[in-house]
Amino acid sequence: QITLKESGPTLVKPTQTLTLTCTFSGFSLDTSGVGVGWIRQPPGKALEWLALIYWNDDKRYSPSLKSRLTITKDTSKNQVVLTVTNMDPVDTATYYCAHRPHCDSADCYGPYFDYWGQGTLVSVSS
Amino acid sequence: QSVLTQPPSASGTPGQRVTISCSGSSSNIGSNFVYWYQQLPGTAPKLLIYRNDQRPSGVPDRFSASKSGTSASLAISGLRSEDEADYYCAGWDDSLSGVIFGGGAKLTVL
Image (cartoon, rainbow over all chains, first blue to last red; front, side, top):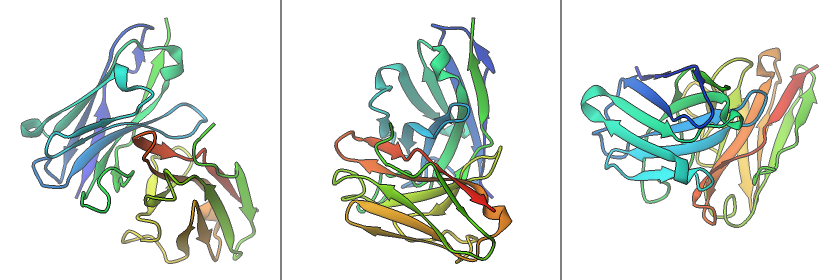
């Protein structure tokens, strides 16, 4: 079965760079059409999409955060890494990674996430 | 302010049918698929509906969704206490070139 798990620091200081790793099993990012996305949720607030990477290394970023985000994949390790630069207290949130099962001509970039990790809470404070 | 507008709350009694709306525009709902997620307290979101009205395997048929023009709605029939959760609509926005989520609707089962 498909599982995903986020890992990384629980606390970062303002201006630091956050690096989060999503380690997954049950699928391969070598498989055509498959993708992995990152979504975050500040405490008590709504979900916010961050980034998406596909089997072919196509990458999509949130327009509002694009300058601060980098998403990469390591297919051999079954991992996807998200870096967020210049962290600020407003970036305090639970960060989730999720599996995107399918990409076709009808829809390749929509928020089609069928399996999610448990999430990891990242706090930003000095 | 979310690009997709949802009512902040909804409620119903056990057995009732409730609907949650999601209002967008021509650049998102009007031209792309809508997705719905259920988030139970303290848990990760769960995909409830994909591609406007498709249910993943394992999602009860009490949950249904539709889309018309630039709006979409999620309907839950035979309401149960375990349906108490936050519900999010989501989609792709062509103008923003990104995924957008609604602000979420908190469903209370009275």
